Image 1 (cartoon, one colour):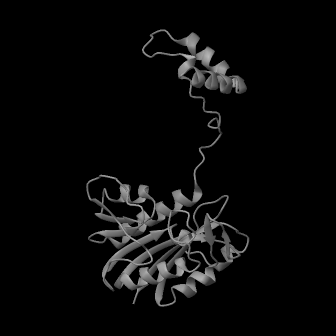
Image 2 (cartoon, rainbow, N blue to C red):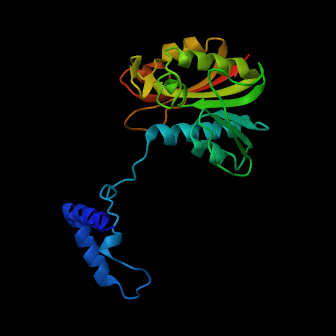
Image 3 (cartoon, helix red, strand yellow):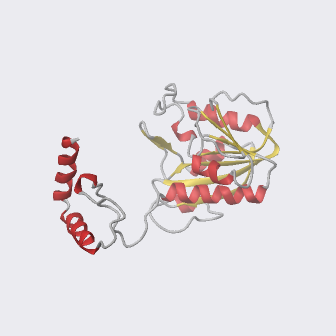
Length: 242
């Protein structure tokens, strides 16, 4: 405990503005409703910003997908391994079946969570009407999440998504995209627009939207030209199986 307190104090000494705020705050206290002691300090040094920062990929692509699910208006929606925030929030309006290689112990109404291997899904052909798999496929086969190393793991996953998608069914698919295809091992793959179009050539592309890496709103109904100066954006695809 003493070691922890010394560590916290040293950190505070390295951030004098926190100490200054601490003592200024302490002087203003009239009603001692809370214990205030340096031993409980938990200094946060990166939050005094002019604007609220956010992860552009994960805010925009989940917001895009939630709006698409509302537009599709399915009886229920199946998600494979995307952000739990997406499934957790959308399940307030549409029942969600969520599957992950590492099952999530998340308990909410209208939300079922189970395990699945995206390279070998335990679903019948043409059986899922409303499906999403977002910011997932780029990881398959890199071993990051304990899966087997497989250079073609992503291709197997994309084939499985197409196999289980029902006729006239919708697939919401998101991956990192840029002007050059590359692997940043073992984090993820980055795809080109041409690659994804080719991998899903048997599906109809209803919408392609794009999240730039550094600034600007999501580009709805984007095209490959929007990727020319980008190395790590997020491509958001709405495919339909015909």
